[in-house]
Length: 340
View 1 (cartoon, rainbow, N blue to C red):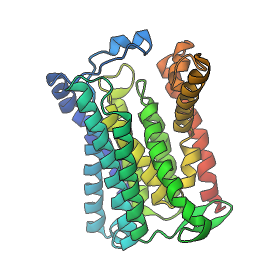
View 2 (spheres, rainbow, N blue to C red; view 1 turned 180 degrees about the vertical axis):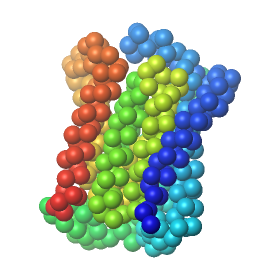
View 3 (cartoon, helix red, strand yellow; view 1 turned 135 degrees about the vertical axis):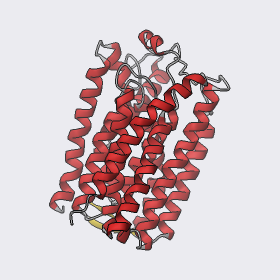
View 4 (tube, helix red, strand yellow; view 1 turned 90 degrees about the horizontal axis):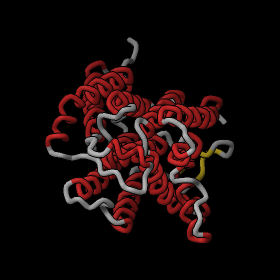
């Protein structure tokens, strides 16, 4: 019997996320949970003022429900997902990744709530966000260590021992890695459909990589994330009917990190997540350059806003940035395919 668990996970995640839009979006409007557009943004973004935000809850619900259905199907048919999750280390990595992403989403939810309900445009302070994100990342890494993560695989090098010597540097680097990529995905969420489209490409890459590595649990999780992204794009493509907010973007950031650690190839996210990376770097360059020269290096940061200011349409930016992500994902997946 052919294992359809990943297909079921993707379809259910898509259907639930898309269907929830008919319920969640009117409810967010009723609560007046509308996006506040800051004056520092492009002038034409003012037309988006009041668009419901915090729609990331749709993706979270879609993914979680799809995993429940996928697991029930696998347990009933005795296919690989249910079998794999009986292994303590795989189950720990799987559950820890999902919980970490949910906790990141929780930080985003608090940030959105403060912005929308308390009417404080900047939400949580940078210090508050940083502390909470690093705390969650540290607990996640500690859980992986307790769950049996003693090595990590680096292409062309092989397994690296993380318990002594230079391998111990992995843990502080991983802490910064998780913090950085979670925030990079958050920065990517700036125009209609961008973060969800790029993450769709990235999740498909990890789905392929997990398949080649015979890692069914993370193949299914990647498929569920891809399905949830497509379901959200149904409502978030220009003109967006809802924004994901930090609730959604922080969840996506946590999820792509969890996928990279779940297949024991976190280094691959550097390439698969190249679009996130260039968004974050552009923001850092802008801040440092302005502090030094009092001039802007880019017309506006993050990078997608620079191209907006250059006259690119939002649809063109989404297409080009997703295409760049696709190229990065090919580079990331090739070592998995060929066993390098």
